[in-house]
Image (cartoon, rainbow, N blue to C red; front, side, top):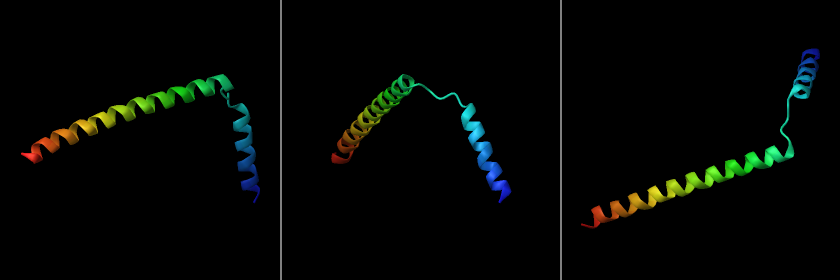
Amino acid sequence: MRAVINFFGEIKLELDRVTWPTRNETIKLTLIVFAVSVIIGVYVGGLDYTFTRILGLIVAK
């Protein structure tokens, strides 16, 4: 039991040493992740649409 208490104490000490991002940094990075996700989603969606149309043309013949 002592080892478990010691383990969680070490976790707390380690988290106290972490340099946490500011609110503005967090918002900025969240927006970047969102924008990149949307861009990749649109790109993959475009590829899917294009290949579906091409395959439809091939199969229709």
